[in-house]
Image 1 (cartoon, rainbow, N blue to C red):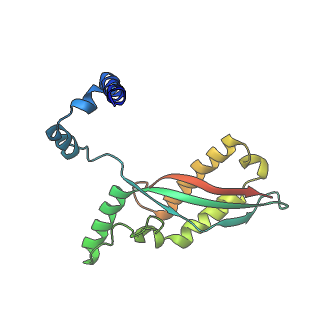
Image 2 (cartoon, helix red, strand yellow; image 1 turned 180 degrees about the vertical axis):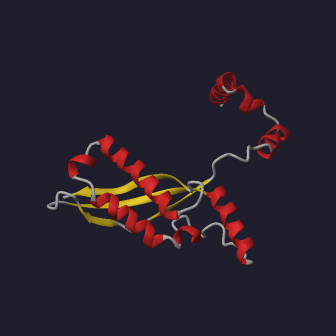
Image 3 (tube, rainbow, N blue to C red; image 1 turned 90 degrees about the vertical axis):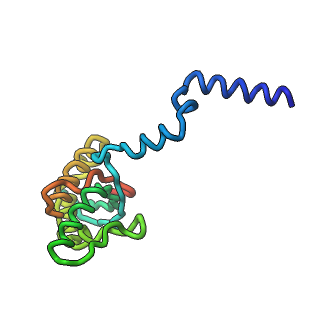
Length: 167
């Protein structure tokens, strides 16, 4: 038992040596840090879109892509609150499920899907197969998504491919 206790003390001492602020931080200091959070800190949510199946520009191959989008929740809430004040309705704010699409974005679903299909259909397999091609495609799709949504500030912060097949 003494050996086990001694090992725990040694581990705690080493932890304290390399992480002193975490060990010695009082509850008051932790509360102050939480209260003093910068309002510009990015708070995000995510939603996943239905798959896209598109003929590529070469005409003989097609692509199947599934995309997840990350959005700025604080910015979206501000936009919804403004829209709620104008219409006199209470905004829906956050989705109930992490896979739900926020209402203000879902209203633009047709325009979003059209923009994504247009971008994907303009590509050749050789353009998007290498890693740098995928990254360039993400950047182009991100711009297209934010354009389709049509807010002054970009609400979508990142996109991720959750499925990517070319045949």
